[in-house]
Length: 139
Image (cartoon, rainbow, N blue to C red; front, side, top):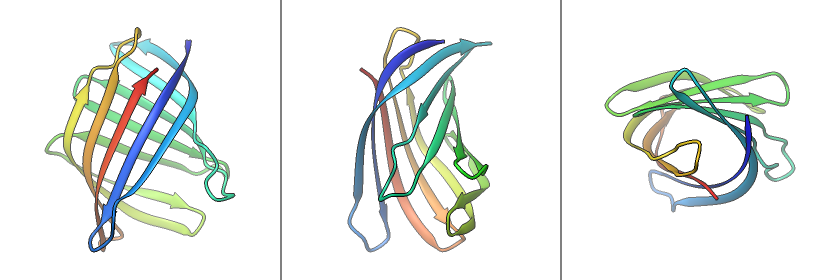
């Protein structure tokens, strides 16, 4: 496992609302196992709410994101173009159904550096429909 620094930029816009953008720089760890790159980092605290640990498993055009909450919750999201992924998403307000439809995966991550870009749509509890962009760069 190797220590790195990552820069994350994400934006999300739900129907009828302006885009909400967030930028974060964090220490992280990177490792390669069985043909996949793993990046692990701690999410920053947002508005006084502790977030948790995030693990990314990146293999070619497929990304699996696992979030480990401070209260033992675990949420998974998978991104692969043309495929929908449905999972439970745990928040401090309760559990919601999260449906992800991936529009784009651009993977240029290696042990030496690079970037990852994800474009995807989210449907939350069958109602809130949003478009999201996530960019991760090793700095």
